[in-house]
Length: 137
Image (cartoon, rainbow, N blue to C red):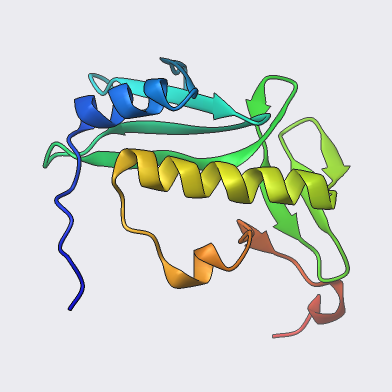
């Protein structure tokens, strides 16, 4: 029988992240007023976390590659993956995807969040835009 793991408190998660060599700093993400969010960075990747109402950690911005100081979104166009911000778009390399996967796994473990099977298999994209289905209803 699997052991039940108690969720880590938000302050405990911040201490654990800092102890695991994550760079933790206040985020300027435009989240709800009164909510203190933190940007965590490692391996050239970043995500934004905040305290949930139950005292655990919630993800405000999903993990992504840092491009020009902004967290990029992973875009899958069927033939290749791309990193996209509001001003930049670059092709994703295997090293980029490996770094994001490693970052996401370490972030999940350090924050005491639930690790999902499909996400542990590899990097998941934020959006899927396949050109061959454009214009279909």
